[in-house]
Image 1 (cartoon, rainbow, N blue to C red):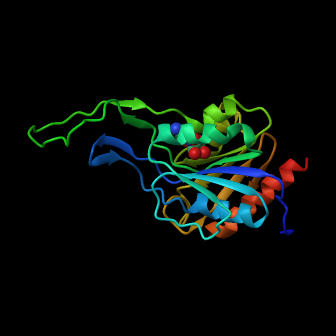
Image 2: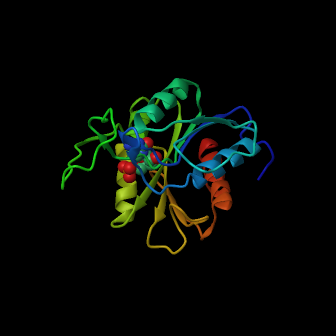
Length: 219
Ligand code: C5P
């Protein structure tokens, strides 16, 4: 890559899972590690971008002090944090595995195990990336898709529905790809192109993704 190729650009990245509280001690979450988003943040910063990383609970650490890390817990907090910055960014990359549903009510006290059955009513969370797409003025938006069936059609459907410029598909069928792994195997779709990449480390995948974004911005 050519040195400071993202100089002057502001990049916002969402990463990690979100945790949706059930009561003061429990939550609904998922196994997202946040690795892909943290790798993207460090690579974008290396390339001279101002980087705003908004992460749900994740064990990952940022080694680059220029990356501005904002930790959030729930999807609603992530949405609010994204929109504190949205007008100022050039590129938005949504790698967070946002919980699709959250408990309708958070119990004020720890729920006791008195009953044989417990029902927790869930309500749909806001779709952060879709909201970004709806409010898009000049931002270049990148989404991720993790599919188990009809993967290409679903990924392209999301590109349209969420008003994205580019979507990164990781297949669960590929050994070593997705979620908790240190490696990933991706396909990138724009409205007109499809590009396949080999299995590689998430740091290398981050370079491929940002190279692709840079090439699109030059078009
Ligand atoms: O619709 P689906 O969840 O498969 O879309 C995945 C993409 O949308 C990812 O880029 C993810 O970060 C983003 N997303 C989001 N907010 C949600 C759900 C997904 O930003 N509530």
